[in-house]
Image 1 (cartoon, rainbow, N blue to C red):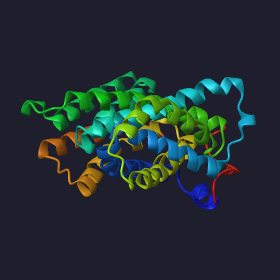
Image 2 (tube, rainbow, N blue to C red):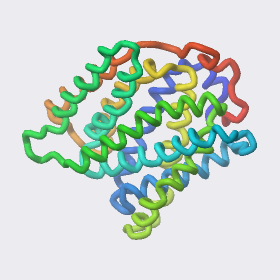
Image 3 (cartoon, helix red, strand yellow):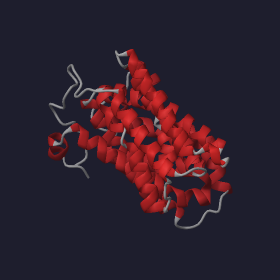
Length: 299
């Protein structure tokens, strides 16, 4: 899987960028699965396969869980599951790049609120202008449900970043994920199972969902957790600003979704808002760097 020495020697920003690319590749590949088992069914299958892979890789030690850890673990699991389910519902209705940009308002707003500089709140407002250009409401063809689903996913995304860093500080390596992704699978079961059963289930859906789950949540979320363990929210948020551009790129390459010039301008504005919203680098304090590579990190 991922060599210990390689992860230990890589700058944290490279882990974050790799995670973002993996997430958008998985989202683009999920579109074909959504057509057969729905967005909720696709999200649930991804969480189920992800939980199975993570248990095989990380072999979580349940005895290490303290009572005070449970609220964060459960909250992160629920947020992770519905961040994925709501986003896939959005992608089923609006272009991938547009959905990512709208979703990005969540972590961007969190970064602005957490910044010591109150003027940083202007950046989410600037990003809204970019989102308006992306959705082009003057054409009268905007899918309101898709926008609302993306906003819901963005709310979950902002909470996900906060909780991931907290859980990552408590549990070494990807063992935190091996505890939260099963919770995500259980949380999304009420919306996912009915869609999966009632959908057009063909033979390739399960292996496709398993392959996508290996990309996200296993690899992508694992890299994010390792990156957040070594970076503060401002630095991570700055890197997140390029994720809408990755969404547009994957939408173009995988789904043949060609943006208009207004939408390209909107992406540029959203990315600029994300880059301007926060500055910073590595985290300060005892968890700033990985002085030891976790023993449960897969080789």
